[in-house]
Length: 418
Image (cartoon, rainbow, N blue to C red):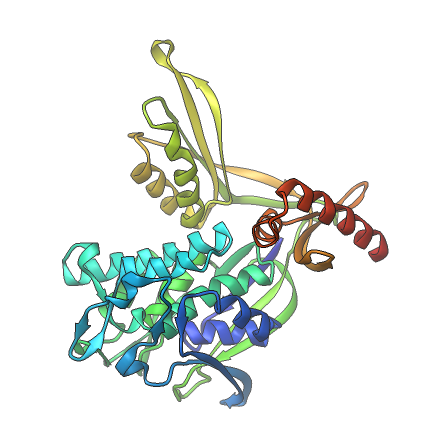
């Protein structure tokens, strides 16, 4: 299992997350190429090698000239966004506006759902702070183009690196005041603090904003919070912030493989996975695909259904999910919110998994991500379905033909790797 651990000793923001991933080996060209699918223009990524209190780091900035006035320009494919309302001379976007931008990029389902879930968390936090309905929230800083690119970029970056699970250290919180669209605010800002509900934090005796709303939304939306899990570290990256603290204002990410048992082909995850399930007999079957997406966005590792015989002889469906222990509350809450059930069951389970990694393979139909699994009988490789589906959409080929062609070429590639 490929994992990423963010060590936020020096703070966290959207651009620090992106900077750390690029510093750890994410191709900035590949990232920017994917981000250009977002229907927003007028931005560019700038990177600079810097030193922060003796630590070499990468400062990455999503530069949008004149954004404070224009907030970027929107493609005609997102007409609603052009109608974003103005406040004090500046346009602000609603949640619907931002989600339209994300959906217009047509990213793989898991990327889209995670980015959407992050912005839904931001909107819910803002709604609680302002005590108004979510659909009336107007995003200020977090609705700007650079924030949208930061959120999409973080999800895309982890996807491109083949990361299966994300972990994060407790988050530091400064004091004093910060300045935003509504003037002076306490640090952490109200929206940031709301996003940090249920997350381990600690106080730092410093007048500063150490975790931004965007950084808080990304990390709390994607990561499990714990000490660094047992892992074999392959890459380390440092993303720099723009502040000068008495310590390094950097975010460190460690990327590698989850450490398993003494048997190299058996990795036991004991006590850190929870199974959550319920029986349903009164829900429209069309909703199950949507519910599965919401459960994955909430942190589920897997979601499945099976037929069940309910009381009074009625046919029903057993809906189940696996989730990290740290995300089980979120998954259970999503299941209760998105279905007609009135209760769920949950218990810890132990898994034994095979080591796996993600590789990028160049085929005759284009670049494809491949999952490579080590088994007792040898290695096997399978192309990612989302990449095959994307090729089928672009080329007009039948998906079955695309998959057969790519699987044949991947098998040949795997033989050459032996």
